[in-house]
Structure formats: structure tokens, C-alpha cells
Image (cartoon, rainbow, N blue to C red; front, side):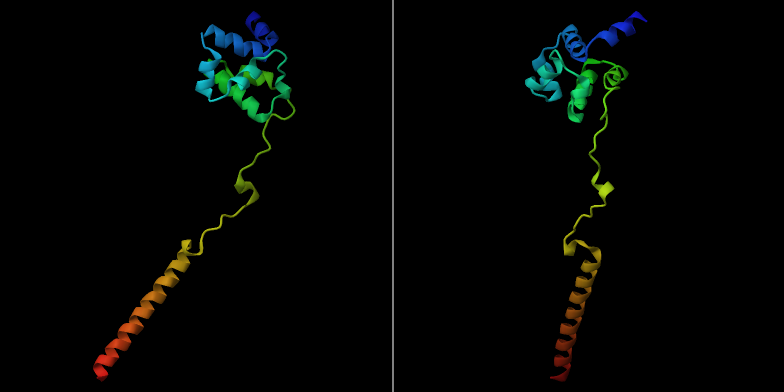
Length: 136
């Protein structure tokens, strides 16, 4: 019970920095592992960090950082519980029914039509040559 009270009173930035330091990781090491700049990590560990002010992407950075440090995901979710915009407004292209445009010859019906026309031309040419040979 006392452990939950301690976690609730710990700010997000303090949790991240103290956990990182307890594991003996430097900001540079974490930066390389997460592919984040030192400036981004320093901002996540900076005093005065307010979880509700973080953008969707920054919350994702926090979640990845916490996962790297082995912090329980439920604990991180508690920091974002009061955020108004917990989820991104980004949507899949399929949601808006955008069609992809394939080149004309990329469609199978066009390929078949072209193939039949070519075969027809070959038959006509061979037929006309054959009729000339028989007629001469």
C-alpha cells in the first residue's frame, strides 16, 4: 500500500530519471536505444513536466522510455488518466476510402485485351501471308 502512495506522489519526470539512474543508464545510452535526441530525453526528465501537456507523439516517447526501463505500463497510464486527448486523431487512409491509382497496364483486364489484340494481329498477318503463298 505504501509503495502505491510513493508512486502516485512521484512526478513522471522524477520516475523516469530515477529509474534510469538506478539502472546505471546514461541519457546517451537511452538516446541511442530509443533513437531519440538528448534534448527530447532531457525534456522528458525536466522538472515541471506535465503529462497532460504532452502531445500524442511525446506520450508515445514516454511509453517507449518506460518500456525500456521496465516500468509497468499501467503505472504510466495513470499519469495520462487526466489527459483530455489520450488518443491520436490520426486515422488510416482506408477510413477515408482513398483509392489508389494503378497504371493503366497494371489492370488485368487491359493486359488481356492487349494480349488478344496482339494475337489477332498475328493471326491476320499469318493468314494474309498464307493466302499470298497459296494465291501465287
